[in-house]
Length: 496
Image 1: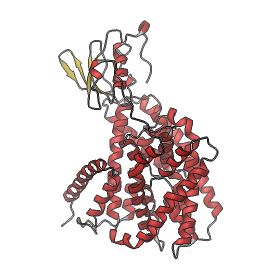
Image 2: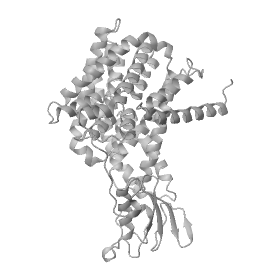
Image 3: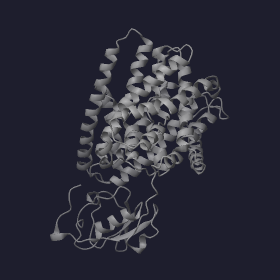
Image 4: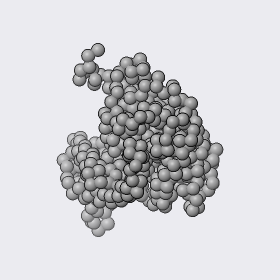
């Protein structure tokens, strides 16, 4: 079949649709959707029934960078600082010392066990698989709505969102040592420190700039705000990389800063980035699945099983317990953190760097890394809720108690009509100036007999009736009070 633009779009749309359906079915059987995304890609590839020949590590790497920016930004945007602050140092320690310990222990194990692997080649493989995967952790924790005790969820999400830069820098450093064993180790360490420092500083500065821009730039259409933030996100990555910092770290920190400040249409923005993060995860896993030749994985299954078991049972637990040695935390919590050492798309993306560099064992390293990621998602991802119950770190799902009859059956799809009372704080002000909860948005405004499509520049009037979609009854109550309470002494609306 001749590959045309039309054919490419047709194949892409079919793969995307099949992936979504497969992922939806997967969770009914307790299987992470990410596994199905990979499987669809592999079935569509050269060795599968689809026969699509996709053998371009540079393109896969480019897709990976584009997608990871979205995934990390979405994760940072949706992370509440008040939940992260109490456990920040635990997260930082896990994302630095924990990654380093995992890389070293796994690298030494590979060097000792796998025939023909030099020390630097072993450390390269260990570095590639050293970080927990943000896409896997975010998607599994949030899609399963797993509620955890002892601030475990913010620890795990902060770790997975911030540890990719460490793994990336270790991968680049070890790759340089494999290519040139005589290269300076001290120089690699210095570059690592510079990238972390510059990336961290740039992330905060760009986050501050994002808040300023989003607040000051008034756009006529609500849908343009997320588009503007996308431009700022990729500019943050590229500019940080240009000045020698780690772009992934900068993107995550800038999103964390932006998401924890009052900005116009924050709820809409969160929903937008959450949806696009899922899209990017699907595209990323499909592309990586297409890149893999299942027939080439078979010879490394034995090695892959050994390394996977070592990482799950030894490397991850040892790195977690040593990293958290000086923090007061229940033994069961540390054990659970040890189990959430999920590998996923990020290690596979990092494994494309040796392929592009053309080192001798690049193909073998890529196949081993792919197998490790697959085993990790299947074993650890599938058993996460069950392991949380065994360790007694899971909490029952919160029961939302409404205060009004119309909220008794409220869910994500519920629409609630709220009147804007005379004398309300926001009468005469723009919709963008109202501090909406994260999961609530105005879908329509009724003014007399007219029905108005709301934008950020819509000015509210007394007597308007807002049709609001809220994720739960608590948010619905907040929005209800926002527009039905009169302002004391006619105070103006606070700045966004």
